Length: 467
Ligand code: MCA
Ligand code: AMP
Image 1 (tube, rainbow, N blue to C red):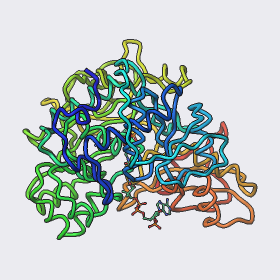
Image 2: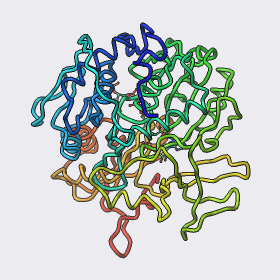
Image 3: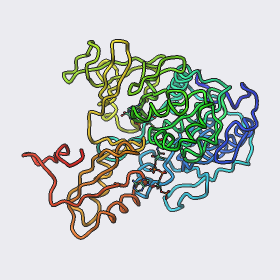
Image 4: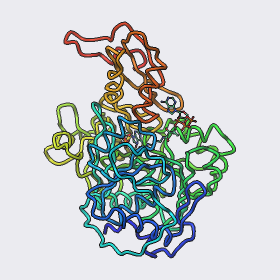
């Protein structure tokens, strides 16, 4: 069931350009040979990290780890020292696959360069369905990111479910330019084509011009990408011939949905998911699409809403916490049984932390998040606590509170309120950008005399301007 790489085993022939990333392509047999050479270097390791640049080397590295049955930790290539140290220490990875030769040598790990021209024909046994394939680090409301362990079976089930919803076949050419270290760009965007047998065109960055030139039949984007596409009318019109445009990772604003439909002649499919659950709800290629709604549970997934008292809500159109169950759920947060446990209900459902409404016809609307401490900016999930911890590590900072404030392009932007002496907002933003990855840098830093607190001394984020 969980052969994640049928496209490499000749099931769909040997297309010359199965995977194309930023002008460099590999055939099915070429990718298999190069990835097997990676597998030869890492086989037997308990875990491997990978500096996941937007390059074909990243695809080769991930596939190599899948072939060898070694769980792989894709790291944002712009992670600063604090984030990198955390990912390596928390995952225990002592080997780092490096596609571009840019990984710093000073982290006490062995760097294994990825050579996309190498070829090996070693044959590795198929790992078990329950084995962990990927460990994806993702932010929680507090502390450093947690490693979400995803099994091969969950990934296979998740990909088959979206292939069903989106009528994804080997005749498709998937085009996108999303980062290769999250579910969207990596699981759906790289492993999806390798499971479905379709070709992949990765544009390195998700720009309107890149999308217009990619010649895809199927396109993936976060709402920021679609909003930039509709602002570039000629790029948007160039997508008119595509079979399907898919949006996810954050809510697609209704005006962007409508403008995209107008310029391309087709309303986009919107789908909803999480790193921990993969894609759980979507509209369908062969069905209706509605602005502001994310559709119906995908094949094999069940959803329900729960009220604040924990009771399951059965009335349509009421607001509650969305819970999901099914074969696409993660194994656990690596090394964090308590945090894992906190996400599960007594009867085994996963608490998403998202607030939703389900109509009488089963269509889902995502209304918001239960916690203000998870920010979605440009589709990236950013934990307020992680950014606050870095700010508090600056010697001039006495107090810090981070929230998401509305942003026309990114949905939300990271905004920090800081009590500090003798330091500028720009210096503090730069301090965060050096320690963490770029998109976690506050776009706005407000230096304030005090943070609003309640009688218990707890910061009242809801009282911060813009929250
Ligand atoms: C970026 N820049 C910044 C900041 N962030 N400058 C100051 N402060 C910041 N916080 C810089 C960049 O380094 C760049 O500089 C310039 O701003 C413009 O960058 P660009 O990449 O064009 O745009 P962006 O605004 O940074 O990013 C927009 C984006 C990006 C490209 C849409 O947010 C993105 O790739 N998002 C995808 C996230 C994603 O894949 N999420 C999926 C999670 P310079 O030009 O000098 O380099 S998985 C998930 O959510 C689930 C499962 C799901 O449902 O999919
Ligand atoms: P991540 O773990 O980065 O995968 O982020 C998952 C979160 O993204 C979810 O919990 C939602 O808050 C948000 N999300 C993903 N897709 C959508 C969508 N279509 N509409 C609204 N929010 C979404």
